[in-house]
Image (cartoon, rainbow over the protein chains, first blue to last red):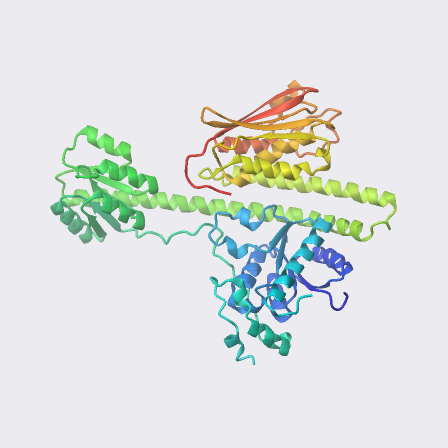
Length: 148
Length: 430
């Protein structure tokens, strides 16, 4: 794949986590870019939309990951990036839908998939593949790219 | 092109389905013009998706609002006049049904209600108000001011009573006092909520800061083992594996500590929720069956289909069941068995988790529910654990108003018996 493999954006404030994840994803042939904050993440998503976003929750002492999720899934400026799948990863043991089951706004912070850190690498890679192939299918169903 | 872009993008409001957000046109447009160039001017800001992650709070009720329910028109008019002059906004109703309907909508701080009315009397009004608003200050007006009616009104949930006839000054004073009391209750509730919120955030952040370094280290080791498969010397693989086990041990400890602090903060279980046990048990058994330790064990689950839901939310009940089933697996022996059974017993749901494991020496049983206590025998020394699992179980069960007991015979096995109150029929979760 190399130069043409799917592009994955990692948004995480932990440099070591970004480094190890980048290494394993690049080994699998993905093109990886990384952002160290929610703000940088949103700018990257807008300027070079990736095929998949891997998103941490707690960054800079705040649950900024939820904000990124909400921006991409609901804000007008990200209408074009709406369908980019988001894989949320965090050391919070419960996914947002369970943790905030009673909150009215829970759908805003619900990602396409959720995994807890530390990641089980084979499980993580499978989830990445599944999300990418599901979103390719959806796009080809809309007639935007020819079905493989 | 940049100027035209907003026209090409379909309006992507919150309520729009996601497919509608990426129109064919806009995608096409982007393939013609490099996206980077198009987006150069965009400077997205980070905005919180919501003010807080709490259920939506209704806007604060109007503080100087009084509802008067009385079938006597003169009484309604005079109350309205007196209180309007004192700066209150007054809504009046001639019967209980209309009054209650409106009270439910506006939740005023104050209600003045007559006891003796046709159809719904004052007591009935008070009782139905108390079902949806425990804090409203209710003043009862009564023509026959006997001690008994006053006591009955207070028992039904009135705050004070006013015998007819009364002077404008008496009405004003009693309403003013009622408003002050309501304000203090609301203020106390707000402070309690804020305190809980601060504690919750603090615990979440501290535990995140404690876990982050461990997670980063564990992740490096995971990636190393995964990408260098077959290239590392056996000794290195073994030591990395041991390091990982220690990291997981530390992470579990932090996780358990976090759970305990949450329970102690009092904001853990949702006592108003009602949750069926069977799906929780099924999920947990399905997950834990996959553990290497569980491979040789037989796990029997016998939960009757018509078991009523128990009090509590899914998260805390899952934690309870998962700890008990986890222990039954950890402290079992190869080829052993576990049975999870539940019955309805005098209004309690009794859950029994029984294993054929190593058992617990009698002298240790009184200490099982103490923090960081672990049974120390040659058989348990290699079993990982934090000494907090059963403490968490005990706290959850106690908070839900239930009980947990243990019986064990060394070398034969252990049984934990949990009794949980059947939920009152209200909202369902998960």
